[in-house]
Each structure stands twice: as structure tokens, then as C-alpha cells.
Image (cartoon, rainbow, N blue to C red; front, side):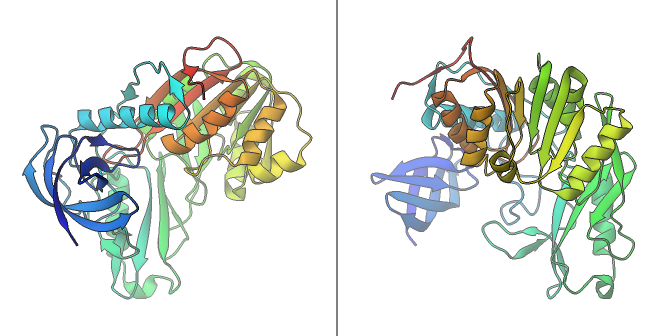
Length: 395
């Protein structure tokens, strides 16, 4: 494929570097803003070229040497080439770009991404890929389904790293033949695995956040960076109070429990039955009897439930964002306030555009770096039907 010399202008949502050459747009993986590069074009799609770095001609002032020996091959981290300050700045710009370009917002105030107290060794949850034929354990290689054999993952919390070493030291005949990946999560009382095998069990864990005790295991989703969960909950529930609240994509009840403290009743909806079992247990142990947990996809629930007006809706969907039926259901309950928690600025902006078109306005926004060394970022947006701080671009 062709080689080009380019200068990277900025980092785009999704983590690629943006450059231009010969009248075409060039997306460069693992770049830094300000890099002067020789790149190899891997594929062409219309007027867009997708490229990888052949040579760093002049490095960006914010480029550093990635400390991880697997960087570039492992698909897990894609920001290790940036100083941590540059990572935060790039994430703030990604959020701004999506809000302006997709959600059509203007007058966006400065976005500050709250840094993680730990830039490394922060992950309490991971999925390890298993290649039994090649006898490798790690993560998928970038852009492929081949397993990158990883002995030391620099973003895993220490106890999780120790368990990775234990799994890697296990005789292969002890691995179930059908095992393709292993979900692992850490808590204050150990590590849970799913599925169980050998000495690695799907045990129940607990974690205390802002005085609430959450029980879970590796079969249920839980956030990966415990150091920022208190701040995340605080902002998401700012000034939230009233009679009725909805918690959509509620997991094991991370937001359900604090919402049940300030609302007369809460309905939490989650598709994963393991998560809803823990949510019910967490509410029961907290002696909170005013919350009801529904096991259903949020889409099915909004289509089948008799929706009544509520005072507050919190939604924390997966990376794909909320389905159109869910946004329509949220509009049907006519809540004066909505909180949208998102791990993908692009799908967040897509869904915000629909809410803004129906009369909601952005009151406040905060971002949290739950995922250092990657392009991912957690964004929380508070919306209301009045008192705008950010306005929408007129079509």
C-alpha cells in the first residue's frame, strides 16, 4: 500500500489521529497531535484513508515512549503514546466534537475530564481471551481476533494481575475445552471468575462506594475503575429528589441504591438476570423497600409497560447507546429531569440530539477518566426542561 507523509492535527472520537494529504482525509492509529509521520495506507473508503505509522519523523511534544511491551499489538490500550495530560485533553476535545457535530450544540463550556487517581493498575474488571490451540492468554490483537499473549497487563489492579499469572500457570488440561474467554472482576474480598473452572470460582464479591455496599460477581457488569465511582454517583444524582425515578440499564444497582434514598419509589430495569439478582439483594441488605427491579431489556420494558410520569430518569446504556424505542419511552414519561451516563461520546450525542429536539436542554456536564491509557471516557449529562446553559444549533 502507498506511503504518505502527514502531520496529525488532532485526535478524533474513537482515538484515531486526523491528518490530510492529497485532498483526502487520513485517519492514523496510535498517533499523537502534532506528530509528523510517514504512514502506510491500510485501506481506503471513499475520500478517507486509514493508515498506520511507518516512521515518526518529528514526534509530538506530548508523545512519550509507551511503557507496555505489548502496546501497538494488543488491542486493549491505544493512548499510551500520550502524556496523561494530553490524554485528558484529547478526551475533552472528543466530547466537545461529538456534542457540536452530532448533537448540534453550541456555546459548550469548558469540558474538564476528572483524572483517575491511578493512571496505571486501576482496572478491577477484565476479559481474558483464551487460545487453547496456541496456548495463549491475553487480549485480542488490534483489529483482529488473534490473541495477544499477555503476561503482565499494566492497567490491571495488582490482585487481578496476580490472578492472571495464576491462570497462566494452570495446566492446560484443566481448562474446559470450550473456554474461549474468561471474565474476571475484583472486589474488596477477592476475585470472581466466569465461568468457574479449576480453582477459579464465580464467587460473590462486595465493594463499598459512598457508604453503599454492592454485591456482584463476574457474571454481572460492574464499572472498572473504583477510584472514581463515588464522584460519578455524586454528579449523576446531583439535586435528584422527588416521588418517582427510573433507573434504566441499572446493573447491580450502582445508581439504584442512592436514588432509593431520595425518591419515594424507584423502578430499575436491567436485562442481565445475574445483575438483577444482585440488585435485589443489594436493596434488601440496605433495607430499601421502595425500589422495584425488573429483569427485561429496556426496549422490551418500555414497549410493554404502562409508563407513568416520573420526576427523574437515569440511564446508563452500553457503548451502543439507547435504542430509539427507549428514547421514545423516556419522552413518554415526561420527566422534568434526565441524567444520561455514557461511555461513548458519539452515541451519547446521537441520543442527546433526539432529547434536545423534544424540548430538553443540557444543564450541566461532567466527564470522568474511568479508562486511562485508552480513548474511552465516561460522560454524564444532566438535562432539564428549563434553565439552559448550553444551546442547540438551529438546523
